[in-house]
Length: 316
Image (cartoon, rainbow, N blue to C red):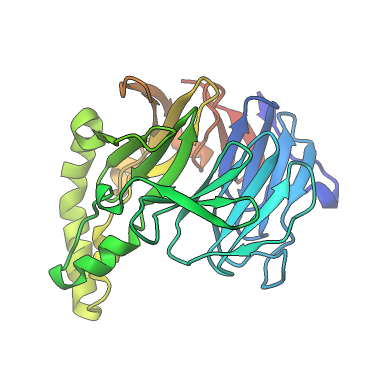
């Protein structure tokens, strides 16, 4: 199956897509275009259903550096770190008034139609919670449950507080925080029950093999960075193997991983599924790297081919 964008200028939604997600309840896809500052909702034939976002800039409804988004049956939300705000859209509607947030947030998720979750938490929580109007309404978990790597030692506190690899997702009644810096998944219950953790390095043999192969390559990059800049070490050392994480329609967490070295990257992406109740992990799908971008939407998985401006249904 091939999906292509409309040919009319107002519907040229497939530009520089940074993310694609499938909404099983509506049968539509979301494509995130960071260069245009827009989020397109399209059907599987490529017809534009709705365009969210007012473009790039510092205006009330514009975005400057939006890093994540989330959607429910009623709302779509953006996290814009550049303008330090969260934008809220009724589904298929115009933007409501945005509200300001801290620039330390890296990820956003909707818990139903009433609560916005932001990670990592700015205070004692792993995840901060806001109302749809932007009022703080508490948090979930403890920040200390999201450990990060600290290199060099003098940067440990700064790095720990940043948690640059934290991604929050809602799966059924559970809140999941994926910390790509430590290959750790932390699962919280709907009422903030004690966290359950999954060490992905221990559970996925392929990930261990990739890390072992990548480490010499990353170490050389780190050494070169040290020669020219004292502040580049942490950024180079923290390799994120997880390129995407989203909720599957059947109530599991779907995520993709890819290695660091170009030789291994040529083998493509691996897609995995996590059962939130049992914490069992199963291999989901191998994706041809020629599609050029991470694909999401399990059990229907899509990938974007930028060269031909098309969306493909991927086969396992």
